[in-house]
Amino acid sequence: MVSSNNLLSSTSEGQFHEMKIVAERNPKVKKWALTGYISQPEEIGRKLTDQEFTEIATKALEKIGVSDKNQFRLDIHNSTKQKHIHFIVNRIDISGKCTVKSHDVGRRFGEAVREVCKEKGLLTDVEIGIQKKAEMLKSLTEAIRSEDNFDNLISEMKKKGFEVQLSSNVKDGISGMRIVMEKDKNHQTDRIYKAGYKLSEISNQLKISEIKSVFEMKKVVREAQKHTDNLKEFRENMQGKGFSVKIKYKGEFIAGQKNEIQDFWIKKIGSSQEKNGFFFLKNVGFSLSAIDFDLGDAVKSLNQNSVINDTSNHLKSEKNESLIEIAGGLLGDFLNPTYVSQDEDELWKKKRKLRR
Image (cartoon, rainbow, N blue to C red; front, side, top):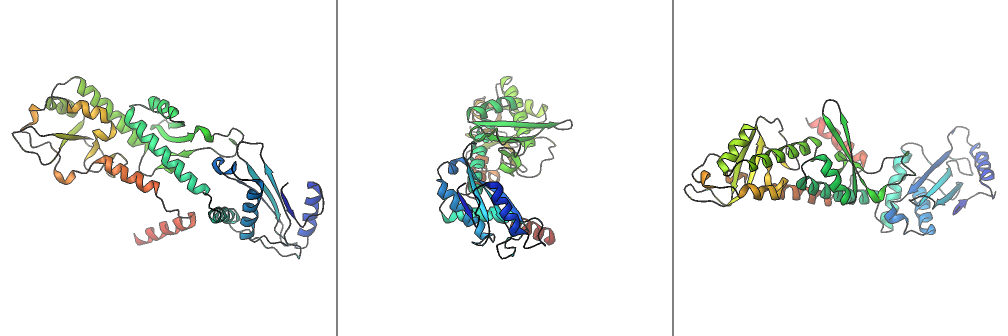
């Protein structure tokens, strides 16, 4: 025990009995005990002294209505991986008044803890979560570019310090992904919450279906590149497998001369994907250099004489934006987020629906 208020007994049983006696002064309130705990991310929790942890808890409790007239007890646990502080508070103060409103108390307390952390110059759980998700997204996209199947992606992510957990169903096969930092695994709390984040929480741009498309396309490109020695045959081979290929040149394409190739944009013929993804650009497809730089260089090395006068299959200048730049912009936005509370986010969603 690190702190208590308005309690005389030296035992936890005696203190609980004291709280119950005070709670009976307000018979209208049946659920008089507020209990919970603060478990800071390990990066912060282990650096905090017991006194600092206690100050965070007491100030956060004050923000939701706990005063010097309320009874409470705080206990710090160091026995688990994440240092945490438990509290039990009597919502009824010694004069019989209920000072802690029950409505949304969990959310309000969470916000109060974040406010106190910011006041003390500490990162909040939300801010640490954002940093971790950005690190996961960066490592995941690097692994997608270097590998061409989920087994190899899992192995590559493990080397980077992450565990990738895949889920599947009969209709779609692999249908979901969760990424966990190895250092965040806490086997003592697995039953309470799942560590890590789902792919949809890490990025709203990158989907499992898009990762599948990237892997499929890389295999097809690699196979086509092995069995051809010039770009014309490569494109015909790809078209036979159901993919269109556009060439992006450095600068404007000039017929009759050898133009320097910058990239290849590949799209599945008849694809129903209409929205931009992390790698996919609407109406254009996938940039080969963005999904696999080494494979892009290998295709560039094919004999180009067959396309010197071909003006029909190059990417026009208005589509000249690099997908690496697009993806980099998305990641940049992700690394510099503005935190919006869940309630505020829901309010904006309702407003957008009304506008429609």
